[in-house]
Image (tube, rainbow, N blue to C red):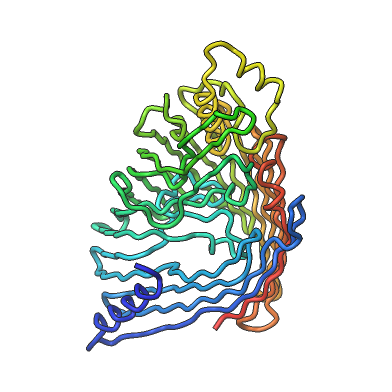
Length: 448
């Protein structure tokens, strides 16, 4: 169902459900204009320019029912393509009482207590190429149902099921590919056998600490690249077709949060296991362990969040070839390979695609270590909000730096300016994307 009919249906359902009750409707939204200026070696000086608007509706009877609708519209250009979109960010209804709640619709669910690194987030797809000074705008929501039970004040059990696959959008979407190569990336709700997912999470709340346990089964939010066809009739200009496909995983993990004044300590750990064998399936990643340690500190008007993330890749072996996307081929080496008796160019291409999947998923090495920091200040009674975010992968050498400044000259008006910087070693993921992702931006937003 498209955005407009679904939003109209939501309004009708909210009205009918609240008929005859003490109801409350709250409307709001915003209008915003923004522009991104490329600072990398990109073909267009204007990286993105857009005008967008949002209309939100919250309805409740303040007793047992709540509904939320968030309609988004955007016009402009991004990475040289015209944009004209009309979509629902969220649209869901909920019935609740003191023991349980039931909700259904398009909803954003964030699992996990960590912030910069989120190994437990399984139902929240993200468009990593979406240009917005408010990074949560890149969250696309999922069509799902959720039931929660609260049998005791200290315990809550959540069960979530999604009938479709709504994949995240990979950072490589704007890459300019050779004329002989085609890459089809999936976007939006996808139907088919095996595309449904479900998960269970238990949250424990105590006096100075919280903890959670969770289990997930279904397609990973990230699609994997799979070889569709490789035609080497003309070895100098082969025709290669690649598509993004789902792969099923089982994931289990836990997290916690506790207060040791003046700090808040957080941690998380997860194990992820693909259902299919990796051998012969280039889109399927290795099994892996991930762990995160985090600390929050709020001295006065400043909040500091620091996180460390580690990973161990199981059943690891070295990639035999370099990734297919984002690397300059060594023509002499290719000539030697093609002249080797028994050489299979199609298998060679498949292994190159597997290498790129490993590069994107940080599985080129057996161990990975990363650290991130976020600092934000609330000055002049919330009128001026400077922030700084940086993340560094010690293993892959990928660096992200995001300074930003928000100024609110009056109620409902926000001026935003900032810079997004990406840097990586030659052949690394951030070396591939930095040309089109590095940009300075400015935006004006008016809330109502």
